[in-house]
Image (cartoon, rainbow over all chains, first blue to last red):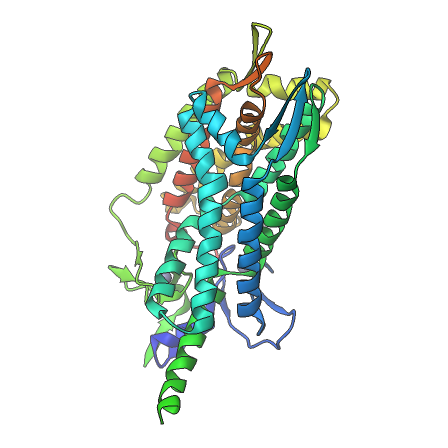
Length: 223
Length: 199
Ligand SMILES: [Zn+2]
Ligand SMILES: [Zn+2]
């Protein structure tokens, strides 16, 4: 198939499916819940709606709040043979390191604490700066950093692991779930919403759209 | 005015922008990242990571994953023993999750990555019936699941450390975490642009 272009910029209208590598052409879709799917394998390639920026900003702030609650408050209250203790995610990691498992401990700290926190901070700053329409280059750099961290994100797997661990403990201990457990569930749900609905390509396209608009507006404001 | 064939187009691995393949020194027009192409050693790095992952997978299965210290006595269990224990205990869903996540997923990833690495170097062996991009996509999709057991042991070791009962992460947990880590690196180092003739 031959493609005629006036400039390389027009390539933005094309998408190579990340699942099957079929070349798809972007079609403008009406504002709403519709999404464009790959012509070969049917996977969702992008969504389109106007509320994207505001919802992304609101959700990244709520994600950060629930993440903090999930890490500060006790995850479970556990009672084994009469001895009782409250355990939070951070104290759990701390005792793992203290018992000498530096490598596993470090790996887990990155996967369940540092990377999720960074991802949500990046989302927040990207949406916030785009909302204000400033710092185009910084937003680009943040998007590149985001793309490098996303493959290491596994909060959903961590939540399932907590459930498995709790079931394993049910036989030998009394367990009461703490505030942080519920906060973690909400955080993971927001996280899943982000991975499913916000594709990197859409963020780059939004960036292009936002800063093009502000460039066009600038002379108008001055004049 | 440009005129390009659709198979001269490649997507940037960082920002997914569609770029024209200039054969050498490809730099993404949108984010400025290098898009590697035609390296002299296209699959060696990925092979090295994959073999390292496979080597660590052996001790991961032979040594205990989790050790329970109770009233001075220790009992450890390997991944497979843990699964059997859960099964006998009647925790079927949990036993299945661990079995799939710790045994099936890593082995499936090894086989799929090895298949991709071998097949892209053998043009004669080019099987167009299997879409290799989909195979790669699938390895990425199932990859994180192999972390479940490491997380579970980490959580249990963090939760249960009382004077009477203590759960300790065994040597296998370190080996297993390294397996997962190197498999992720191997998948990441695999150059999907080596896949041809699978459209
Ligand atoms: Zn597709
Ligand atoms: Zn790029």
